[in-house]
Length: 241
Image (cartoon, rainbow, N blue to C red; front, side, top):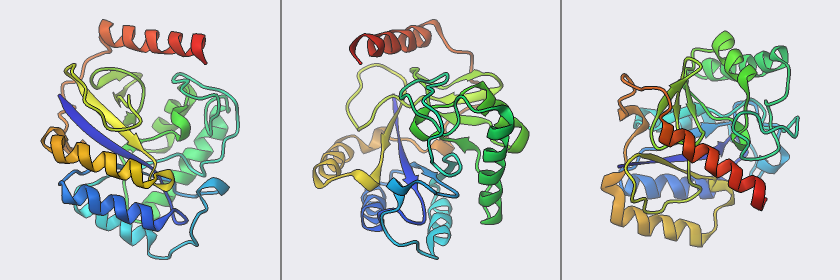
């Protein structure tokens, strides 16, 4: 059993106080997460603090201490009400757009990362939603070959990409073997959320792994158990949404 942490919505106008609090907390327990960075933020909901010119230097410092830096879309503005192939929500920056439109988005986001000295290997779709055109755009306009998302018990390979599943929105004990990603949004966390995470880290920090340390060289196709998990989850959401 391995736990991973993913932190979404880092950008130049994020809530710096909360992000620095999260950084200090994870450093305290030697946990190294995936940080999903919005390269060209235009989402008003993510415009919290005035932009800081030191943002990309801060991200580079995180990378240098083995935090994984992922491409979190391009501008984080939802263009459609599509859920794509991972319909966690009915809103998307990508799903439902044409391949040409999605290639333009990926190109702009990836070029921004490259201009700041980063070469991301993981894609994180805003609101977890993307489609096959998103994968085609990633192949055409980037060197990314890993997706952080979808439901499964462990990483699997599909469409020539490796998928590292993202199952839970907060840290909690899981009794089944597998690789489990807890997704947090520091911009919207309150004191209770930070405190609950610290309690969990204090008790289970040895179960946490680094994205960079995952062995992804022998990843297989999605197992029947993983397919059943995904099918059951989305059928449940249809009934109770």
